[in-house]
Image (tube, rainbow, N blue to C red):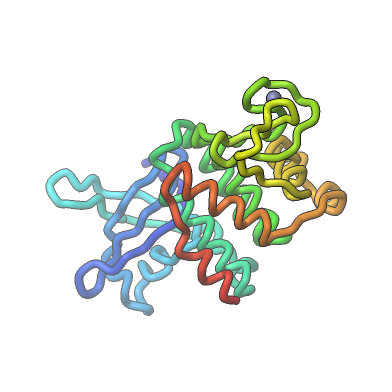
Length: 242
Ligand SMILES: [Zn+2]
């Protein structure tokens, strides 16, 4: 018997006592019926909680509507993350993006590992920085990466004056037209560094050398996701209220 490993990213009530969970694995997104998951005393209750990594086995739901969770084991319930309200909300934000976009990503294995990496770092480090890193690098996996390192029109990397949201890249002094709105500011450099640095090379020393204005970058990312994917986060509104 081969157990699959996955992270629970969405959980919805199904009938009286059950839940449908959505799990991201190295092969992509799976939905599973978890019987008795609504009963807090049942074993299955813990296998339906968000931000939980499980290994599991399931019955193929050829006849029924759903695959059914047969047995599971908790690998990580991210207890450190769950002990901090801000980290939990940030975790929910990551799951929201993961669920929304997993089916648009070709390299599911790489995405799964990146999701693990992100949740681990949200637990251990500054959650806001890793929520930015996740969303910036996700744009690359989605094939709509912003071009931060050269002019989108002439491809030169000199005299870059700002970022055009319409063209999704930097614009240089000689290509700039007066009527064009450009996004400027120090956050561009910060985003460029976070985008181009490999995950394993990201660390606090690097973050200390950057000027990280979370609200500014968050606004940029929200505009970008809305413009290129028509996506507006519901969780982000909750975080903003805090
Ligand atoms: Zn140019």
